[in-house]
Amino acid sequence: MDMERKKITIPDIKRKKEEGRKITMLTAYDYPSGRLIDEAGMDMILVGDSLAMTVLGYESTVPVTMDEMIHHSKAVKRGVRYALLIGDMPFMSYNINEKETIRNAGRFIKEGGCGAVKLEGGVEMADITKTLVKAGIPVLGHIGLTPQTATQLGGFKVQGKDAKNAQRLLDSALALEKAGCFGIVLECVPDRLAKLITEKSSIPTIGIGAGPYCDGQVLVTNDMIGLFDRFTPKFVKKYADLWPELSEAFRKYREEVEGGKFPTEEHSFTMDEAELKKIKTKRKAK
Ligand code: KIV
Image (cartoon, rainbow, N blue to C red; front, top):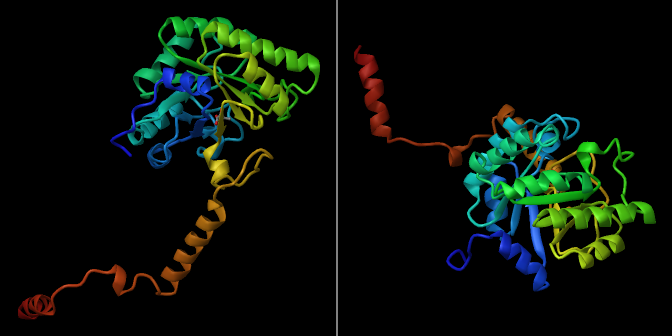
């Protein structure tokens, strides 16, 4: 399989939409998750700012810093050979001014080893998207529920349920396409609105809680492997349930060490009896 697999490029992602083939994407935060997901054949891997909650234990995605994102991007990159790696721009890393935005996005490419960046926001992000694309940095958009500004949206709610807000999302998708995004994440929008946006835009839509009609799908890895204990959104399908499994493993290890059941001979190193005797003899001679 490795011999035939090629590194995924942005034209490959766009071609998949044209050919009606689904695009696959998951998040990764470190070397093992990057490597496992890449080896599973994923098209794109996002070093999501969900890192903040899933791995770093913050209450929301807001506090995660550029340095933290770059540190984890580098680790993921060491495990990824084929997938297109995307760095998620953290809150306030692209909202202050053009210079700072280009510098931060550039860090994901130069230091983090990413091939693109993602940023949250609609029409209002069109200009900065244009600037980044002009600077040679590919951009993945993200509209609908945008966790960094969830309080402005009334919390973690489905977006675009009425005609006015649905129109706003469609206009945003088209504005981001015009600005040069190579794709758009649609988070928590009704399935038929996602279908309409997918049909109207020529760039791929990647859904998360946006139903089956998007050109591709993304999930937060720690949600889909059951390694996040705080909550599981309705749109997540759990493909594994690691939290209780790991919890049981750690508890059992402690019990076995305390009870003298681990380690046994199986996990110990032996040495020749004669060699052992030599040491004892030497000690006696002293
Ligand atoms: O940070 C993240 O994991 C994301 C996904 C919701 C796409 O942005």
